[in-house]
Image (cartoon, rainbow, N blue to C red; front, side, top):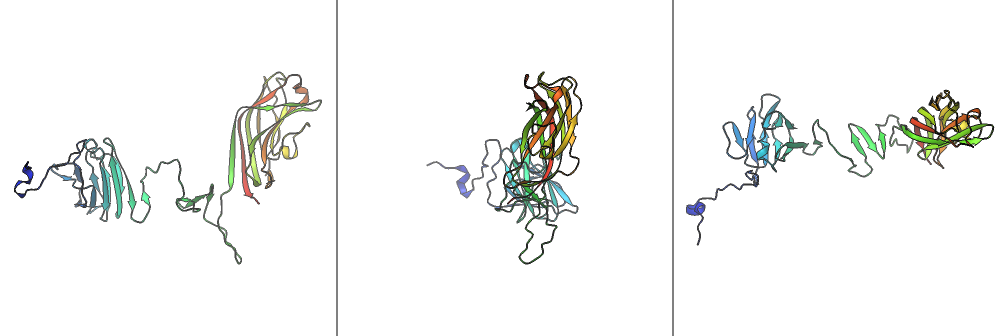
Amino acid sequence: MSKIPQLMGGRRLTHNLEMAHGIEALIRSGVQTIDMSDATVTLSIGPAASGETRLLSNHLAVDPNSMGANEKLLLPPEASCKGLSLDIDNTGGEVIIVKDDSDSTTVVTIDSGQSGRVNCDGTTWRGFTGTDGGADDFGSTGIKADVVAESTSAAGVTVDGVLLKDGEVQPATDATANGTGVVATSEQLQVRTLTLTLTNTPVVMADEAGVVAYGSLKIADMPEGAIAFLGGVLDLDLTKSSAGVNDDWDGDIGLGTTAASNNATLSGTEQNIVDSTATPQASGGATTGNAQSSSLPGIVDGTSTAADIYLNILVDDADHDVTTTPCNIICNGTVKVTYVVLGDY
C-alpha cells in the first residue's frame, strides 16, 4: 500500500495547485480581507515580497482606510495572471483606484460601497464596476455596443435624462395637461433633417415640343402622416450627358411633392419645398443647381398616401433637342429637407 509522505503523522497536504500558465489557483469559498491602512497595496501571485500582499482568494473585501480621498491597489504583473479574475468589494469610505503593476494604467475606479471585477488575458487587465442595487459604472471609457435594447417592454432607454423610445427622442413633458381624463403621456422632438447625397444621379429629360425640356426624379418617400415642411436646400452640380442639350444651356430647378409637368415653368407642388430657381448659364454643359426655400413651405397631407419628394429640372426650349438626341442632366451634391411629422390617422 502506497503512502503519501505529506499525510504521514497527521500532516495536511499543502501542495499548491498550479495552472497551465503558472498562476497559483485561487480556489476559495471565503473572502480575503485587506486593510490598505492609508497606503498603496501591491498584490502578488505566490509568495509575497516585502511590501506586497499575497492573493489568497479571488474575492477581496478591501478597506482603503485612508486619510485622503483614495488609495491605489496595484494588480500583479499581467504575464503571470492569464485567465485570472478578481472580484473586489470596496468596504471603506474612500475610493480605490485599481491599477496595473507599473502604476501607470488605471484599470477601474471603485467608489465606496461599489464592487468591481478585473480580468486579465495575459497582456492587459480590464475591469468594470457596479453598485449594489444600482446601475453599473463603466467609467470614462464608456460602453461599446451595436445595439442598446430596452429592458422593460415599452419603457424605452433613458440616457442622461433623455428618453429614447420608439425611434424618437422624448424629452421631459413641458406642456401641462388640463381637463378631466386628460394626461400628457409624452412630448417628442419631431424636427428632422433629411440629407440625400446624389452621385452621378441622372434626371431624364423629356421634350414638350416648342415649350421646354423637363425632367423629374423621385428622390425620397416621406413617412406616412401630415408633414410640415420647414424648408430645404439644394447644393448640386449639374452636367448634361449628351449633345441633346446645348453647352450653354439655361434652365430652372426646384424641389416639390409632385413631378414637373410639360410646361415652361415649375409651379405649385412642383416646387413647394424649394422654390423654382433659375440655373446659371452653363459653360461646357455644366452649371450649378443651388437653391433654398424662400419661406415656410407648409403642410402636406400624407395621411392616406405618404408624400414623395421630386427633384424637378427644366431646360429652356431654345437650348435642347432631346427628341433627336436623348439627354440626361447628371446631378452631384446634396439635397437637405427639414420637416416635422405632425401625426397620422
